[in-house]
Amino acid sequence: QVQLVESGGGVVQPGGSLRLSCAASGFSFRSCAMHWVRQAPGKGLEWVAIVSYDAANEYHADSVEGRFTISRDNSQNTLYLQMNSLRPEDTAVYYCAKGGRLSNTAFDFWGQGTMVTVSS
Amino acid sequence: AIRMTQSPSSFSASTGDRVTISCRASQGVSSYLAWYQQKPGKAPNLLIYAASTLQSGVPSRFSGSGSGTDFTLTISCLQSEDFATYYCQQYYSYPFTFGPGTKVDVK
Image (tube, rainbow over all chains, first blue to last red; front, side, top):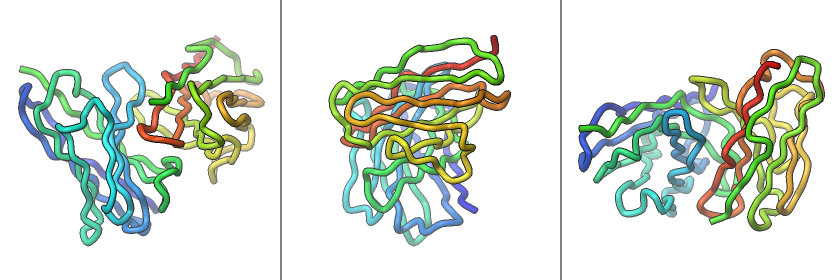
């Protein structure tokens, strides 16, 4: 069965960095675009970034552009989100989500999420 | 960026009710529209994709319709496990955007 397991969350001071990971199993990871989506406490869903199945293309939301970088290692079936220059407004649960081979597909499986808290 | 709106933002309903949630895109998204259900403390779950295609394993009481800018999620006969928050999402163009959510709670 499809499994997505996020890790790497925690408490960090403003201006700090974190690297999130998402370990994938149960499907052909190298054939699927992958996403990060976040949800601030008590708020709605915010799409953060996408990386294409072959890592050739990536796109980030304006709110994280220049600070966050999505990447993947298809040999390790792992998705990453490098987060730098963190701000209090980046506090959220971060979910990885599976797309399809094409970038314009819905997110059919989600991980359980990892919490990131940015606070001094 | 394409802005997604939903109505209503919340409402109360009873089991057995027919429920309709609306979603509107600020510009056309063709049929690149998905609906997700989220329960407290859980990850979202895909219900509908391509505006009207039921995701595998999702009960047939859920249905979606629309194209372009106006979309609807319908639950034909609300069950106890359906009390949750529902989000629409466009995946037509970057940045992919979600609606603000519609919370369905118990009357």
